[in-house]
Image (cartoon, rainbow, N blue to C red; front, top):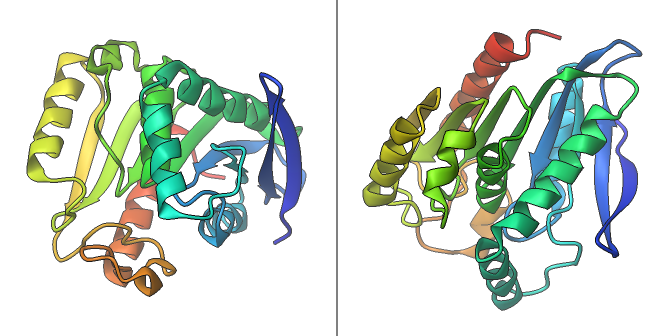
Length: 237
């Protein structure tokens, strides 16, 4: 499956995303893929290709507009965006607009998925009131400085989390549940035993971070849960 670079611009800053088209010329759903805090690595590109193999058009968005070369840079970039939600949401909305504009995408059938900070990104896209069918966060950061914006969510929301994730403890999960309930959101939370953070990412084990590990069973189970939600909301391809 070929990936095509897509160069775009937001407020004078250049970004480069990657598009995978599995439509075979048909009108199909379009999916935004948001990367982790490490930036545009091989993982979001792989996921875009996986979605294209299923028949979708998938766009791996560039959230940062810069290459991440250190954990310190990644944390600084993430904290900057978490304190500036309008900017983060605008980047998600721009990526969604790119997906909807693709000639083989049915703009009424769209979704967004994200991993780690990418999960945070698609949740903020939902909190912005975006016109999208559903969002899915994998080992997703759940915290937000604007939980009251859950009332703006129009789409279905799913988060897939590891029970042993040191980054997303039970207290954060409980706060998210209360936020979704207060916003009257159609939401679900999948909690997987024996899984920590970054359970979808085969690259993470090399980093040797306690509590971060690829977990094949949870990766497959959460991907099936996503596909089930897609079938329900945006229809089969």
